[in-house]
Length: 343
Image (cartoon, rainbow, N blue to C red; front, top):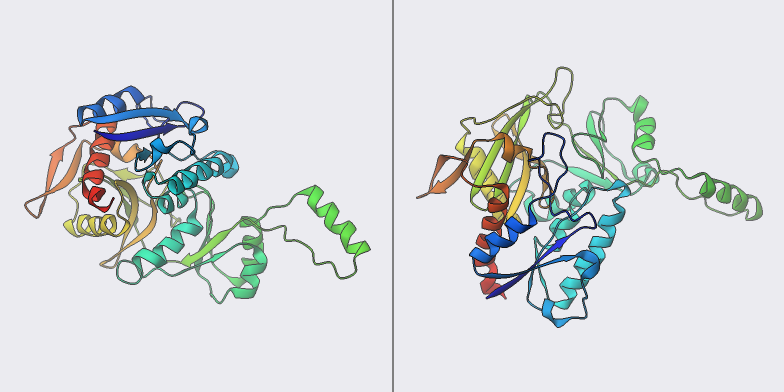
C-alpha cells in the first residue's frame, strides 16, 4: 500500500475552494480527500506542517501532498519552504516538485523556470529579473513599451505598463519600494560616522520586466487536473491590457484544439499533476504569460460545466463529472502512477 501525507496549514486548510461562495476562502474537504485516496488503496496521514518531524524515517520515499499560502509578505510560505526542503533531503517525494512550489506567488522564479523549461520552443516572451532598483539601473537595456511586474501578487495586482522613459524611474521605484524608517535612520547615522559607507537600497522588492504584446483581446485560463482541462476565455477591459482580474470571461466555450495541445505540451515539460496556465494567442503564436502549480484559484473549475480530455489521440468535450476533491485525487494518483518507476 502506498503511503501519502497531506500537509495542512495552521488554519486547517488544504489548497483552496469556492464552494462556500464567490469570495470564500474555505479549504477543501479533508475527509473527502482522505476517502478518495483510500479508495485508491493509499495509506493516508494528515498532518499540520508543525507536526512534521523530518528526523522520522517514515517520510523516506513517502509521497507528500501539500499546499502553499498567499499570506502577506509570504511569511508562512517561507516556513513551508523550510519544511518541504527538509523533507526532500529526508528522501520524501514532494507533489508537486519543490521548484514548482517555489514559483507560487513568485513571478521572478516563474520567469527563471520559463528560461529553463520553455525557451525557445514553447515561449518567445523575453524577460529580465531584478532584485532592486539599483540592479535595474545597472542592467536595464529595454526601451518602452514593456511590462513591469512585482514578484508577488495575483489578479494583475502589481502589473504595470511602462509607456515612456519619462516615468521609468518613478514606476520602478514604486513597484520595488521596501522603505523602512528605522533602516533609513541607521543608514543616515552610518553615513555620518563612516565617510565611505555605501547606503542600502530602499527599493529591494524583486520584480521583472517583460515583453509587452500589443493588441491582445484577452487570454485563456486553462486549469488542468491530470487529464481534465477546464478553460475560461478571459477578455481585457477597454483601455487596459490585463485579462487577469478583469471579471470579463466566457465559460463552456468550444476551444481551439491548438490551445489544448499547447497546454498539454506545457504539462509534459513541467511534469506536474495539476496546473493553472494563462495562455495568449499572439497572431497565431501561442505563448504563456503566467503559470502556477499549487494553491491556484479554483474559479475556472467551478465556473465550468464542461472539461476537455484526450481520447484516442483526439480532444473530446465532456460534462463535469467530479468534485474538486475528486479531481485533485485523480490527478495525483495519475501522476504517481506515471513517476513511480523513477523511485
